[in-house]
Length: 130
Image (cartoon, rainbow, N blue to C red; front, top):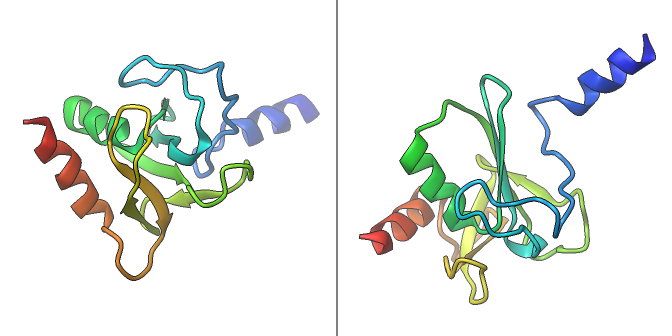
């Protein structure tokens, strides 16, 4: 019975998964996810997960694949060494920051003054794509 409980706990779609940096590929660009400051992930309503090396990759993936998103999380760029520093997509904002793996130019922070909303950041990234 315990293994079933552990399996359920590991597949909970209401929480981000622990990422093993430098061992998992971005589901958008294929690069290895290596910098926690820019990591992102999502889970669909069907429980399928996707990991990203840059918030821009998550925005491109959503635009290209139109998944039914249950949750999306962005790693808090201010706390790259904290494996639990994930921000829910409904509680995240973005600041401009150089050095993102795919040159997306943004990093996630908690909602606050002077930052871009989820919608504004998505529009900025996808607008630059054209």
